[in-house]
Image (cartoon, rainbow, N blue to C red; front, side):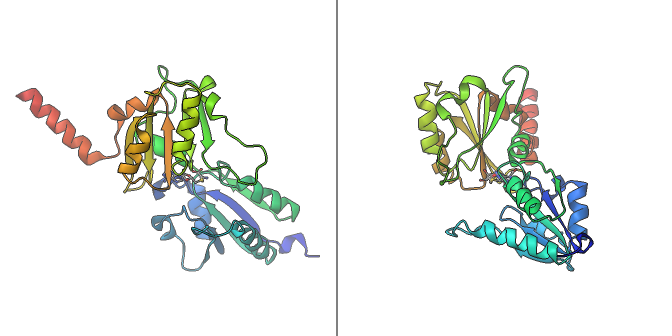
Length: 269
Ligand code: SAH
């Protein structure tokens, strides 16, 4: 058996929602130190460009139509490289523990006696909300918020998110991986006899330069989303708090300045 000192280490690290400026200092430090970087589909170009020449970069994201076995490949690569004494950076979109399988990967490392550390990242639900001007809590509109997946493990025997009852106890719901099944999800919420005027926002490519935000309500959001050709990655935010997007929306600086200018001219006239 290998001496423990010969082992490398695996850093399971969140890269944040997309904007490279939202990487933590620790993430950047590890990017610069890593010998091997295993990265996901959600890691964008701007972050990949920060990877040093010297690091071996391996894409381990799932491609459309791939079987789910890509996770096994990721696990094998983590174990193999760490056993060879390498410093491995397992870089994941958002936060590793929010719908990111970080827990499963840590368990595997423990089973194989591989040293590891875990570094949090800004999860896309929070990044997308902040960059679209939707405060997830607010003294007037929301005291409880839930992070929910719209796409559960198909092998799971007993799902599932209780969409019908979700709004009985929380004010704001942040849905990850929700766009593909949006219609079904909204149908279930409807069965819970919820106010169909409840505001909904969808934030595609949150925090990135091509961020796209649409807003509507439970009644019309499915149509609006089709019209706007929303595609993953996107976060769906449901709750009264979404109304604030109109006011706080700050990221689209150009249009904001434009609006401010228009308001000023209106006032003058
Ligand atoms: N661990 C990640 C989530 C991985 S699940 C995190 O903490 O953010 C993948 C889902 O995350 C996508 O389907 C989408 O719902 C969401 N997502 C990731 N990046 C996003 C982004 N930049 N904008 C909007 N949604 C994003």
